[in-house]
Image 1 (cartoon, rainbow, N blue to C red):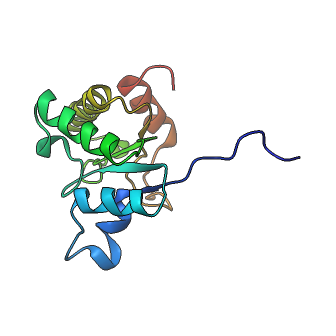
Image 2: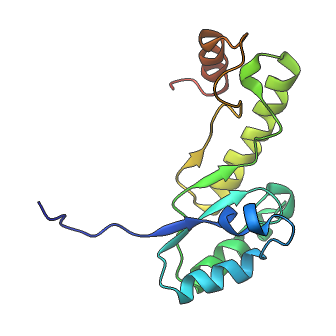
Image 3: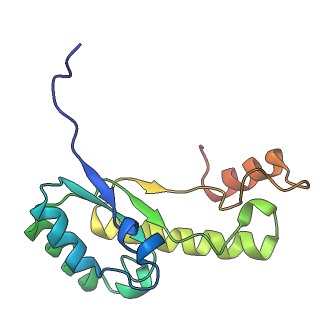
Length: 149
């Protein structure tokens, strides 16, 4: 069955900030221009430095400029990957859970200010899980952070 509407194509900005680009990331404005030139419909923003980390766009006005840059290049932002790698909350440390919640809220606020409809999250814990990893505890923590999951 042929789809009624073709899907839009996007790529994560982190593709130009990690791996072979880790030591020399391509700046976000350059990524945005090039993706637009290549005909992409969108860019999923990596919420980590040097791209779309909340610290780099601390004020609503800064975020408006980011959104304007994306619009000028005809790119949508279907999702945001929050910079949560240094906050392994799923292991249950209350201090880490608190830091995770605080930074996650900053990321949600960033998405709200930029009109980004989806935020990507994970446990930021390597798989396979650690021997002492407790999935039930993990889901309890997730439900405290974001009720309704």
